[in-house]
Image (cartoon, rainbow, N blue to C red; front, side, top):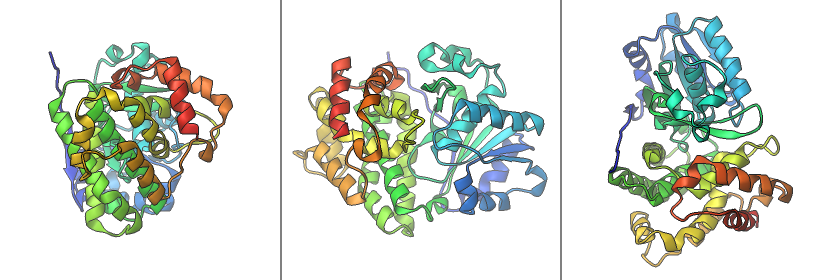
Length: 377
């Protein structure tokens, strides 16, 4: 028996930001908390959002989202939400502000502690009523969190865990590629590889969901055809549109689950030092996992190659390594500051991560030790 669910409301195209006020009215939100980060404020993106909203409903801003959102930041933002008597949330930014906003929306309607709702701790059934109304405005083309049913949050004890369920999906996603035109080349590349990795892992997941497979294949093709152009020609509107669509498609496919790439990148993203970018981690780890899974995916590698306009005999792992190199992304975890002494804890984290269950090839402690060794370089 295959259970298939889809998903949420999406406004997508250049100029979609102009729909935000109308969408908040649909949600009966009159005093939103805007959750973002300092980079979004400094880049002037928050001003663009403010321009699209009547001054009467601009109530509060929380702009202290860390690079990897934390339980502590969720509590800080929740305090602002409650003190300002907010009745909804607008998340503006990449995956970090959107995931943080999901945590705030959850605790606005559910009692603390946050940890009790973590998926691997049996928390999904405890998310019993809808979270506070949430509109997500992505400013990168990578995470797909604007349509994802999960939030990745680092708890006070250092564990980076997934909070998953239908009540966590934003009520509306406002996807305006215009907001990505100023994204620097490195972040364009790293977030773009995040989108590509999502599409690949969704497609390779062994769960049965043909609609998600079709979406993921289409998204992988869009990402592969456009990521280099978006990175080197950041003002190319079509490339930016295509990458935002690929990102959205990756997020729509999360219903199928992900795999070992994310099982490894999630605990790495929970490290206090060094602070590691999720998309960069996925780009670095993906080749090793593709080699590991190669004999466990039937004809899926050939179907991926076809979707990405590659020959059927293409070595996907080597292709991704070459792509990373052309994009100027690092080749190993060691290159971005990961040290050997943290690897044992990362192996434990990968085995416990919710994405491990949907890797196409079962993984053991020894497997993850070998995968981390390969990714370390």
